[in-house]
Image (cartoon, rainbow, N blue to C red; front, side):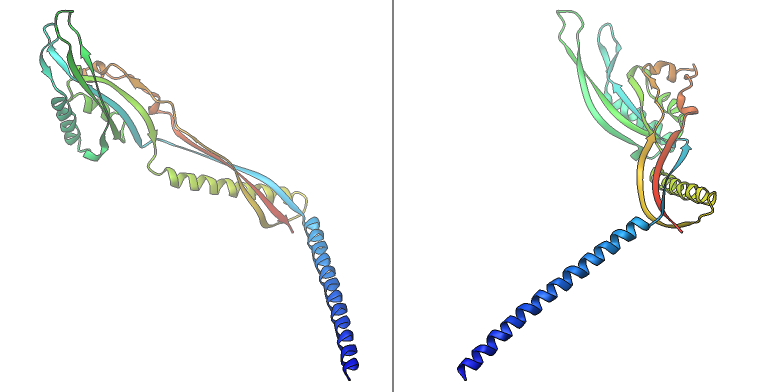
Length: 253
């Protein structure tokens, strides 16, 4: 009886090994067939690859100025009657208020100073200066504002940069238009060969360009604060430009 049981166990073991071997072969065969089918499917997909482009130009509605106010002496020769920063800053704040501009449009960007030396025997006198960033929506407003500030206390006014308040929205719109242009191009190209456009297979952003115009600089505010008209700047006609290219792959029906 023991020998019969041992013999049966050996047969069962051999049968199990054989079954596992067959199962492995079936799995490998099925996997290979599936891989070959996928490869053939990829190779047989007819597709078209195109690039679309879109542009948009807008007038800046946010102009950022860098303003520097500097202490000075009313009597420069004898260095008397110093006009301090607090007085100059108050003039600037009052100008903002008169123009109905939010106080938040003006922020401090830096503080500096220098020594005024008048002859070897007289002591050095420290004169402070303060830098601000001012955001306005209309370029002409800067003349009205700075006319209310003592021009002797204005060291410089620079246009630092320009922006648009809806920049993010414009980016989205132009990218969507670039993708639509790619789809339209693919459609009319396929139509010319009696084919039709299928579903998109791949979409890729190729180029993301944002161009802001060059800015002007006013280094002498005496002209701006006087009755002489300020010179025209490129910001009166130059625009911010958004330009994007999108690549798309479509299936051909």
